[in-house]
Length: 102
Image (cartoon, rainbow, N blue to C red; front, side, top):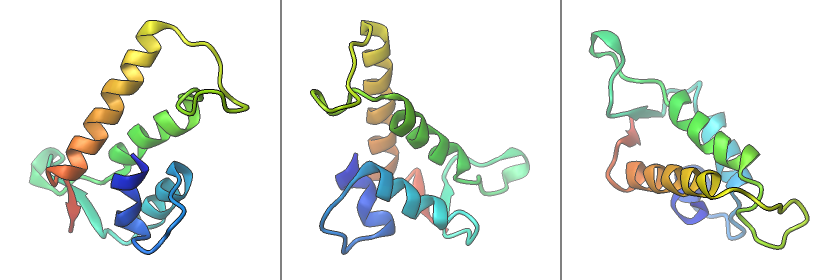
């Protein structure tokens, strides 16, 4: 996910982490630089806070994404599958311009 998200906020960053990518994207929310292809009610462009929330869910709660790290822990099968599916959705939204420049 870092390789997909980092270029959106800090394309020149050589040390890519999910936390930095998330922080860079969050800092751009107020500027309205990004929007979602899925509109809000009334055909208004959708705020990307929903997308940011999905990334935050993985960043803050999927502590075992780096196996063997100091925060790693055993997790249940359904938790791992949910995290994988969410990561796939995030990457797919970036790669297919569901998240796009406004």
